[in-house]
Image 1 (cartoon, rainbow, N blue to C red):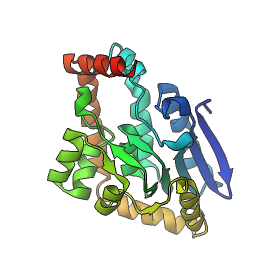
Image 2: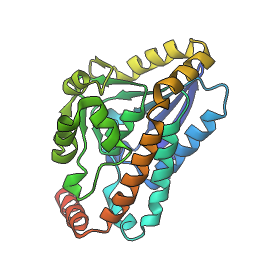
Image 3: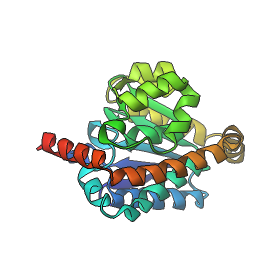
Length: 250
């Protein structure tokens, strides 16, 4: 595993934790690779019945590491590590549960669209700030979000990039259940335990039936977004947005 991604097993539940707390769990290429490896390994491990995603330190994830993205923009082929993770995530056959505290930004929010259950603190906040960074939506969010909330609401969320509160996310169906601050891990683990106790094959087949009809569309959206995203990384708009973002942080 990676220093910033920890893995543990609890009674058939694979728990993957983002642990780069000083950067609000911003995800690096090495972290993507670690997550990809962990999910691929779990697919072939009969001991794993459910996978749970969680962010340590009070935030789920602040999204991609912008400092690293500045360098990726010069060598877009490095995006393959990100695409590999998104493909594994979108095709993952076992139940996938997320426990969300604090901020879930960018890919930290879009990856939730691929989860089977999302449990969140009432203080959690989702944000999809791709356009503000001169980019476009990713992780098939341009396909999945309109299906969930309709075109107009999806346009507002993905283009304006305003913060979506946990209550709003719950009302829109992005989040299954809410809990008090600091309780998301416990609640996600509770649901993971419930699922792990069910007949494994019946659960897997049920997930496949639920996702089967739209899987080709998801993969097509993922590839199309990826191509445009890669081009946008080299755009003047993205370069200016990254520079402004990093200046503000300094």
